[in-house]
Image 1 (cartoon, rainbow, N blue to C red):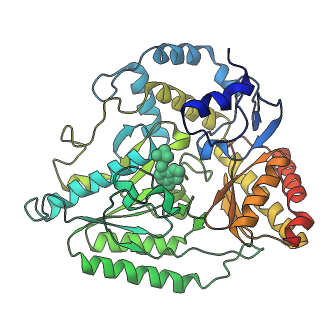
Image 2 (image 1 turned 90 degrees about the vertical axis):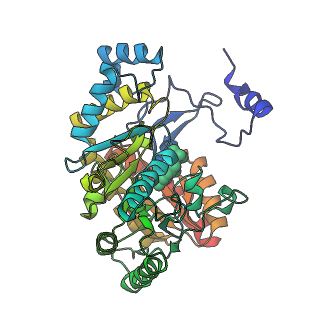
Image 3 (image 1 turned 45 degrees about the vertical axis):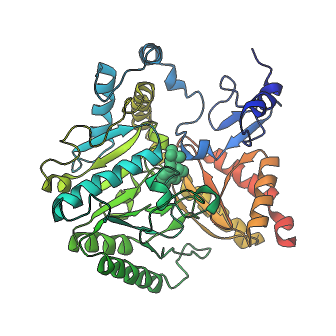
Length: 440
Ligand SMILES: Cc1ncc(COP(=O)(O)O)c(C=O)c1O
């Protein structure tokens, strides 16, 4: 067995190992607490492996014997799920497609990785649009474009690098498509939770740019893609009115509306999908992270084209078609989230955290624009350097959080977080910020 103190040096010898200094102890971590086997310290985990670990560590209901036997059996194998099926796969697909996906979305596709989920949403849209306008009209698809947003993050794979525009390091020097990129009309919130910027004017600017893109590429826009809340780009929230305007434009111009819910989906907002909170339904949703299995689901708009990608073999596919171990674990997560009503829990705890943060900001100052829903909470400080220092101070308090956008701190709580844990986190934020934050 490797000494935990050796982990970083071993990794550094063979790969870039610029990650967190701690070593995750999978036996001793519990609930919201991440145990560092190198130091023995425990951290409150409000980073949750970049919003991908939904129900904390060693949840007692994961101790179910039948589940563990099934998990071990599938872990000893690795079938090509796209073409060779198992009862484990069928019970996952049935659970996900009937208890997580709403009924208006009959089509599903599974893959490993959020960026690949987005890639396949784009491929679905390209195929659909090409057939809509005539396959001989689109220069073998090369004329098709995707409208997307400033500060979007959709991943670091081939197509998605043409959409991602947060930290330039992530995409520079890799060939990209010059697809139309438009303004993101983010809301800004005062400390009572009211929007305090002229968001309607921001939305008009964005919608004008979307209309200009449709005019510049007549009959060539395959889809409009947006995160219903931009994560890495700055936890930027959009009003339902704006998402509805995009919905209307996509209908008018025969483009698909794609919501990328890799970061926000699978109960992150309390509901299975953030778009359900907003009340505006897309045509395709890409998902990943907390759902463990990544992929897309689509409504029947794709069926306008009879031989669409969900009907014609090998248009979208991969060897493993997702991972069977992830499928078995995801199904168990669905059962636990339902049984313990964890969506309702995180919605309530998110509100508690936001109110506490707003009270703290009113009382002490130093940060503002407290915003969020469910497990997805953020606030702003004056600049990126202050934010980075504050993240370090939070870690000294043993609270793990994440950066996003130019100057935001974001929290990604596990769905199991309790009221007393939220109160503890608030104390840690108070200790880390306080007079120091006002002095910088
Ligand atoms: C909204 C969004 N889309 C796509 C991705 C890419 O997912 P992955 O890193 O699993 O490829 C992410 C990852 O952070 C994301 O937040």
